[in-house]
Amino acid sequence: MEKHTSELGFSPRVAYDGPVDASVPDAVSGHLLQVLGEGLSNIVRHAHASAAEVVVTVEGGRLSLLLADDGVGFGSGPSAGQGIRNMMKRASDLGGSCEVSQRSPSGTLLEWRVPI
Image (tube, rainbow, N blue to C red; front, side):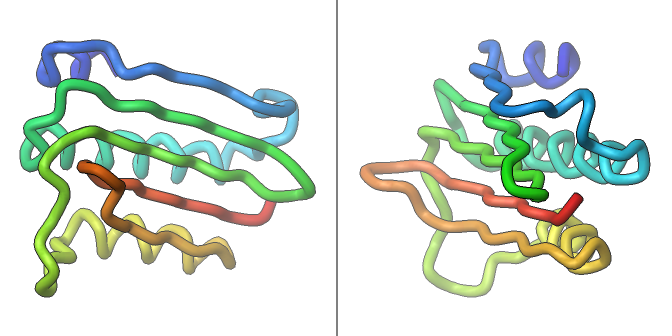
């Protein structure tokens, strides 16, 4: 995350909820780290954000990654680039889901959830 902190110009707020270290299998944590890296890279490249928040939660047999920023958001037309498609595929391959949505009043929210 140090690389992204330098590129963003700020440190994202990071929070963990639940037994993340003890509950997430190595195979899933590899995907989680790749998705987090891609999400932060997207913020660097596209968001023009001044703040970002990462929340990793383990609850009820599910792992959730929420990545939110306060940037410019995205337009209403098709915008899923290769990075977003990769995040969606990683979730789907693990039996989960990935959604990217507009935040109010500004910014983007990435929600990546998989069973563990």
